[in-house]
Image (cartoon, rainbow over all chains, first blue to last red; front, side):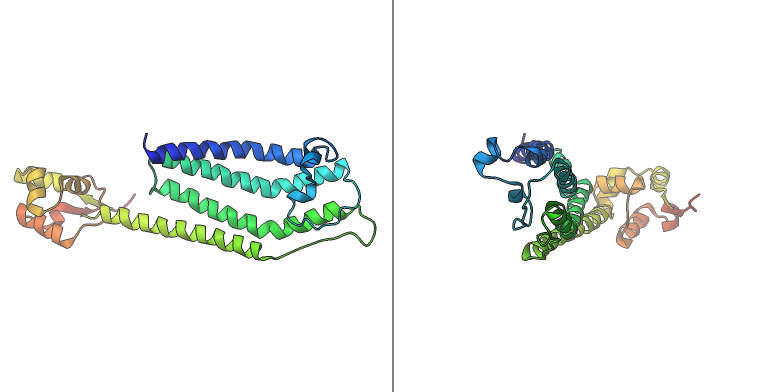
Length: 183
Length: 68
């Protein structure tokens, strides 16, 4: 087995592991006891894992609130899992030797598109999460927070570039196929 | 769609594919691509060389049929 195949197989399995572990970790983050056990030992709270960690969470989160937060978190995590799935398919193509093939390029395009979607819906996710986490705070401490930092634009640009590169590769492959079938 | 009748002309002239490919200056693989209708494009110079060697017209090799 050559280097590309070995590397592709390795990363394919890595992505599958992350794919299954991610939602489990998410559930653990939301529903684990934050006062005791591993969470407390590591000094983590839910705020450690949300984009806007300066939100004032002044009352302990009820189970209903945790469920709301968990379900809302499933949106970006779901998109992330979809991107990981496309990566597993992409590396499967590489494992079969389909590096410069239409199949693999299509997966790169899909990854770019969903990276863009993930970045684009981030503001909605931020607003929703800030409302869920602060709605039970006393009056004057409830927030609907939204931020457009450099991270937001950077992620949008990177996603756009991934899509653009994939598009160019696709057009180049079409040209190559046409030329190779020109007698 | 364009139908390639090169096989018919090769049979009429009793010329082998390998021989035609060598004379025209293309690989046997490319000639096979042409014969099986998988070619996306054909150069004028290739048609010229084929017709010259097989002493035929382009219409003897390429035929247009309407898609049904």
